[in-house]
Structure formats: structure tokens, C-alpha cells
Amino acid sequence: MSAEGGVEIVGQGLAGCCLGWHLHWRGEDFRAFEDGRKGAASQVAAGLLNPVTGKNFEPSWRIGDFLPEAVDFYEKVGAEVGIPLWFPLSVVRLVAEKEWGKVSGKLEQAQVAPWVERVEENLDGWRAAVTLRGGGRVDVKGFCAATKKMFEVRTSKLDPSFVEDSAGRPPSSKKRMVRCEGAFGLMGGAMGDHRCAKGEILTLRIPGGGESRILIGGGGWLVPVGNGLFRAGSTYEWEKLNGEPTMAGRIRVEEILERLGVENFEVVAHEAGIRPIIRRSMPLIGRLPDGSVGFNGLGSKGSLYAPGTARRLVDWLLEGKEIEEDLDLEHWMGGTA
Ligand SMILES: Cc1cc2nc3c(=O)[nH]c(=O)nc-3n(C[C@H](O)[C@H](O)[C@H](O)COP(=O)(O)OP(=O)(O)OC[C@H]3O[C@@H](n4cnc5c(N)ncnc54)[C@H](O)[C@@H]3O)c2cc1C
Image (cartoon, rainbow, N blue to C red; front, side, top):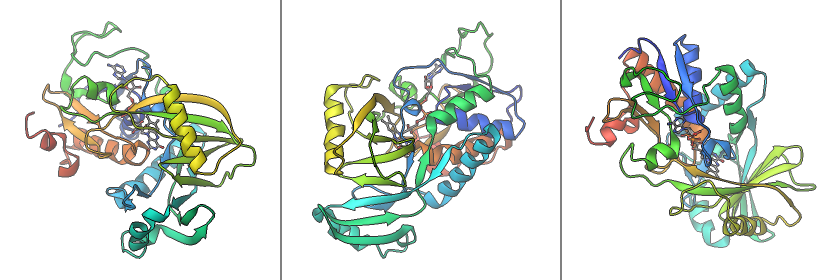
């Protein structure tokens, strides 16, 4: 399919902004719409990018494909807008005694070993600390703000039901409309069942906190963001999906901090957002049943997957290049489109 007459992007979170850059680099005309909803994930995300994750200590899905592309992408955009967006950092995974059997068994495995820089055992309060290479932090909020400025994004709603939008624009073909609406689209039923999860996050000032590494352990993480500030998170809540921070959420993040051994801190901000989850953190792109195009499901790992997924979407939109089966929305939805 060719995108004659330009593309319309609904939503300017990570998904919509990455899509905008790839269209721009291909010289394709587009218009983007963003109506600034409370709870948008990209406005609160810590931007942490960790190559080996979770209780199972597994490399992220297709990390070899998506990580180099993501790093190149953020460096290139950062150079174009004149703001650093990618901050490489060591990731220190703290391992409790009960996790050590599983983690230690993975350290020598071919898909894990290249990410492991060093292992220290028998630390104060932890069975081990595994330092991983290849990770870092993306300034997600800064990236979205710089992108919106660069492309003069329209601050209005684009109604995906597509009769006429609030900017008074006449109806046009849904085929060129890409819905990058994050959790708001999923909660509206755009892609069938979803598993969106609210997350709460604290921004902290920590005197003397280590600014050179990301700490992961105790069910959460602590990420340095510069100038003595850190972000800590995060909670998962599947019932009340909104952008409101809660006292219960704050207490849960403070418990994570205690487990990570962080005692002296000042809370500078407390925010909440909704992760757009369809099937863990594996995004989907392609034709929706209503004829428009979807790009969603970045889950908890938008920083890693958004750039490479957006590029693949543009390859399909502009050149008709086939979408890989494991990213293909139509395949996932059972060929309903
Ligand atoms: C607390 C928390 C911490 C996180 N930490 C990390 C992390 O450390 N690392 C990581 O990789 N990921 C993290 N994530 C996940 C990451 O934030 C998401 O994967 C990513 O931001 C999703 O981007 P998106 O563009 O799909 O959705 P969103 O960021 O939600 O963007 C969708 C946008 O569309 C707009 N919109 C929707 N409908 C319309 C419409 N009709 N018209 C106009 N605009 C519309 C909304 O206002 C919104 O801005 C975190 C998420 C949360 C909640």
C-alpha cells in the first residue's frame, strides 16, 4: 500500500512520535494529533531499558533486533533536536537468595552470557548482584516534547470513528490513519482483549545516590535521571485504570525503595500512567477491522520496541513490505480485518 496524500497519526506518545520521525526521514507528509490525556504512559515512563528482565532472567523478546535500532534511533533524533535522549547505564540486578538458583543457572547460557559484565556474590542483604551491559535510559518525556515541537503537532483530538475531527477537517480515508492511542485505544476496544496496567512512579532527590547505574531488585527499580534526581517504580494495577496517583501506590514504591536499601530521599513528584498491554510487551502493527491502521501494545518496554516497530510499520505503509508474523495485528486478531 502507498500512503498517497499523507498519513494521519492519532496520538503522540512513544508510538506516534517514533512513527512521525520515520515518516519524516522518508520524506512522507503526515499530520499528528494529540489531545493530552491524563495517564498517557509516555508522559510518566522512566525510560528504563534493561536487556535481561523479569523473575525468569530472560533476554527481552527479539532484543538483538530491537536494541541496536532503538539506540541508533534515539541518538539520531537527539542529534537532530540538539538534546541528548539516550543515556547508556550499567544495570545492576540484585538477586535474593530464593531467586539465585534460577538466575545463576542462566548466567552461562548463550543468550544471556553476552549481556553479563560481572557477578558479585554475598553482598549485604542480597545473594548476588549481576551487572548487565547494553542497558540505559531514554528521556521519553523529552523525546515526545521535542518531537511535538519539531512537527508542530495539533493539540486536538482526532476521532478514530472518523466523521469529522475537532479541527474541522473534512473526513478522509481511514486507510491512512494510524491509531497510536496507547491504553486509551485498547480500553476503547480497538484491538479486542487487553491487559492494560496502571503504574505509579516516584521522582526523588537522593543525596549521594549513585548516578552511574540502574538498580533492579525487590520487585522494582531505581533509575538516575541526572542532577541528583532519580525515578523509582513501579506498581501494577489492572482494575482502576486511570492516571491518578494513590497513597497505596506511593507506599508500594516506598517499600521497593526500602528493599533496595534507599533510606534518605525526598519525593519530588508522584505520577501514574497506564501501560498499553495486549500480550506482555510485544507490540502489534497492521490493519484494524475498521480499515484504519493500528500501532499499539508496547506494554512495559516501549523505549525498546517503539523505534524498530515504527520503522517496520513505515516499510509496510510506504513500500508494502510484509509485516513479520509476530508483529502482525491481522494475524493476531485472526484475520478479522
Ligand atoms: C509508570 C510507568 C513506568 C514505565 N516505565 C517504563 C520504562 O522504564 N521503560 C519502558 O520502556 N517503558 C516504560 N513504561 C511503558 C511505556 O511508557 C509505554 O510502553 C509507552 O509509553 C507507550 O506509548 P504509546 O505511545 O503506545 O502510548 P501513550 O504514551 O499512552 O500515548 C498515547 C497518546 O495518544 C493520545 N490519544 C489517544 N487517543 C487520542 C485521540 N483520539 N486523539 C488525540 N490523541 C489521542 C493520548 O493522549 C496519549 O498521549 C512505563 C509505563 C508506566 C505507566
